[in-house]
Length: 327
Image (tube, rainbow, N blue to C red; front, side):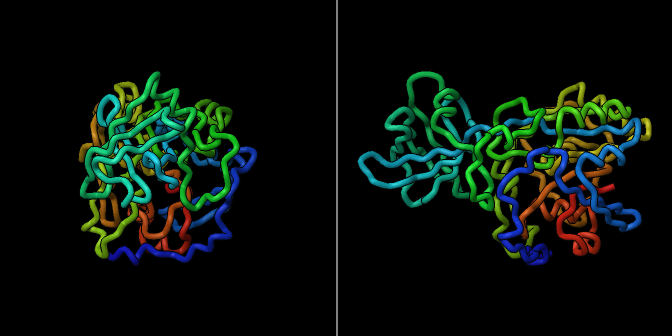
């Protein structure tokens, strides 16, 4: 399969720049894979598509203010860091722009010296390994200097950082939001539970693996970047019970899907586990765990679009381009 097979025309003026006031009032497109029927609804209507005994699985990662702007000492310039993951202590893997100004041996200063980064090495994928130096608590300094790392197609400033967090976000560590979950409210989640649906939480910290562009012609040659995940005993029990008792497992987002499919067995069960995943799902993949997907907008030729296509089917996918729910 070619990367260009997953291209579609995306007029920039059609991309919303501001979040809707009420999360659950967002538009929802329903695809029934069995019949091919497509419906236009409002997100809060999603409750109509759950059955008692189903299990809804959410990624409770929380986005950190991972975007930093600084410069080399004595230089009038702007260098951008995107924190991808903490390797250990004060050592991080980052993306830098412009890359030619961030070489091993360089020292980058942020916030007039509140935070200083020594560049240690450059990876084959263009990431940098840096060591931060500072006085105080790193997270507090990051809260002061960092910005929310919005997608590149969002050009307007986000006034309220919490709108780029899910209402159930809990564990800090992501460089981007698991955006499929942004449309849920606490009230809607309560209504879903009251219908007899079990809600399980796992954690995958969104990093380069989720949003790295595909730069090869043949998608099979693309290598996914690893991302850290954790699945608890409680979550595994809820998911396995749904599978065993005939309920459906509905994943919220591609990150949740990739985590479940990483740890899923051919028998359709999972085990509690933590680790790193670089699973790449594209058409031809046989899903082991999920029965449905709630997903969001994805860019042309992205790995996320390829995952969606693997579940929806190429013909169904080509009819609709942007799909928010699958059965």
